[in-house]
Image (cartoon, rainbow, N blue to C red):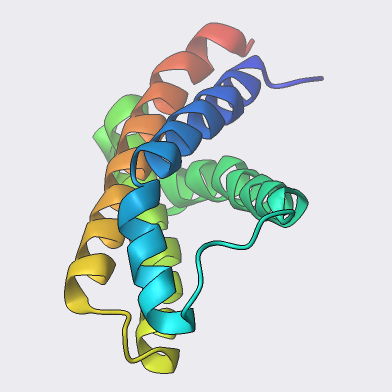
Length: 138
């Protein structure tokens, strides 16, 4: 059986994150150019879509598991929101920590901004997921 709330969250997550990336392109492109000396490479949309697909797939499975294991007492909406925020912190924190370790030009401002985005999108999508799940399950 298809989990309708998960499908809706996947679509919303993708739309919101793509919007954020497009709105932030100049900022991140400046950072990438400072590191590599060139703009974002064209023709890599497939790689980006595959990466986002994995991220969203992980979100859909990790958030309910975190909720069940650690945040059940908060209620579904708050528990999923906290689980989503934790997911965002870990995933975006690992990504930014790795970049900061590898690239001298990956600064604190970039890391902070990106990690805050991960927490924000994770929290908001977790709250939506938690609020919708009881409506679409038996």
